Length: 119
Image (cartoon, rainbow, N blue to C red; front, side):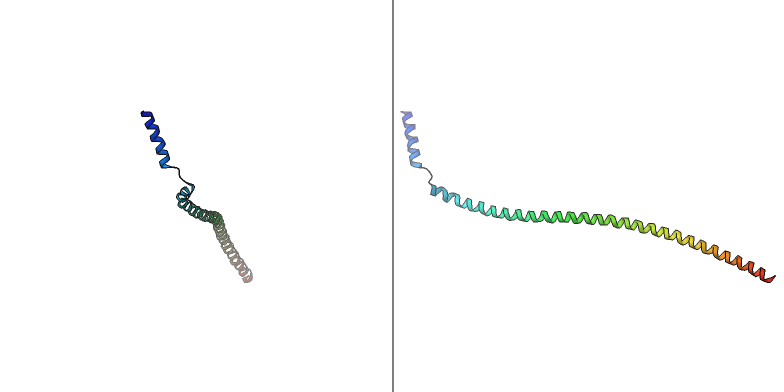
């Protein structure tokens, strides 16, 4: 008897509750589907923005590398300029020394000439 009662209760429960209709399911899913579509559009837009930002970052990385190369080139040129300044200073010192020697030789030559002319 208990078995029959349980079986009857199950059968009644299934027939009374029924199944979900396609229309009911469609009404329940429609808002979710709209939200998913909306999110999909937003994600597509964000993917485009991310792609554009990646391009900018790559461009900036290239620019940064170019700037670094320029900095290195400027440092090398500064070093060359400093070397040129030192070479010019050494050349100037040697030129001054040569001028002093030439003036000294000129004075000696004039002194000899004066001695020779006085005799």
